[in-house]
Length: 247
Image 1: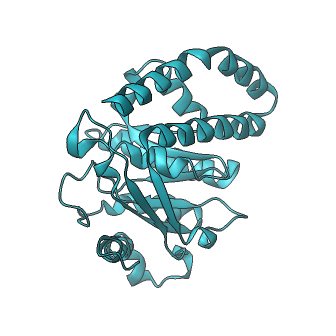
Image 2: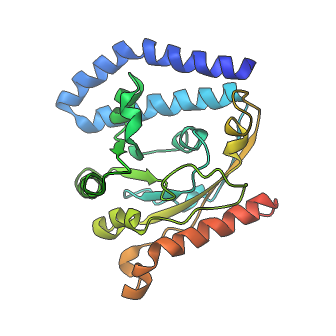
């Protein structure tokens, strides 16, 4: 329970103590949105790294050099834990938002910082609102060079390690319509940090593997129709390899 108390205390203290910093960032954003984005990214990234340290989480990173550095990307990842976001965002090097569930808008301060790092909030029961979010993300990728993380399983997967729920094909439209590359991301073992034995937080080794980028514009029309399945199978293979210790 000590790690759990430390992590919760840190999150609460960060959200409270960062209020004046957030006000400064708001002023900066009135004149230069990009500077605000970069400052927010750096602050949140460092906070997440501290949170991982307090949780005793050790990251093994594979293939990070494959991520394009000169253009925005759509990260497509599996989702098993709250710590998926903490772990992956601790590694970002450019403004990167997440497609998050709408319910997080109700969390004071946290939702404000999520907006600061360009997150979008999706109502999974509202198809029209979901389409509006995708269109908004496409525009921001094109015009503002914002990268995004999506979890196309649609919810946290409570199945066994190495499993993967079906992907929602529509989630790939951000890359298809904006022209940005897709980077499949296989995240292993984050469930063992907290969810597998809530409320205890256990020191855990997590593997994050970045796969070769996929450029939808270079695929045939037929392949683009099965793009979600293609990315799904790539991630599933990596999860299986990392589960057996042979990434």
